[in-house]
Image 1 (cartoon, rainbow, N blue to C red):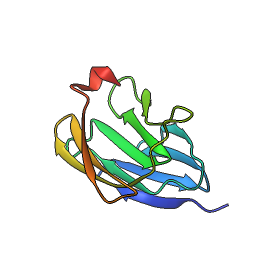
Image 2: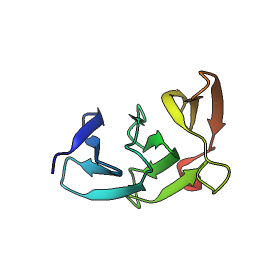
Image 3: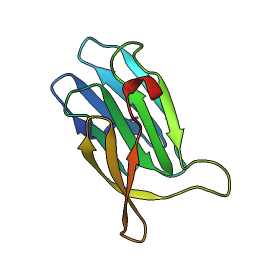
Length: 115
């Protein structure tokens, strides 16, 4: 099986193998970012390396500090799934996501403690 890299920073890599996404730290720690229906489409790592996001069928945010690997899911509830095609960071704990229709929407999650 082959892992496909979605994004890389100095200390972290977000990859997926088919429908399963994971983040790997430079020291070898790994955390699952969950299963996606269809391969994950996009990912980003916070510029300060405090969190990462992976998206496609909804969005998963994951803490990269302590505790490493704590995640929160958004837009993945049955009947309310959002298909995300783009991500961009807009603040220390904020991002914008692009839906299938091309429109960008904001998501502010306050602090890493909300993960």
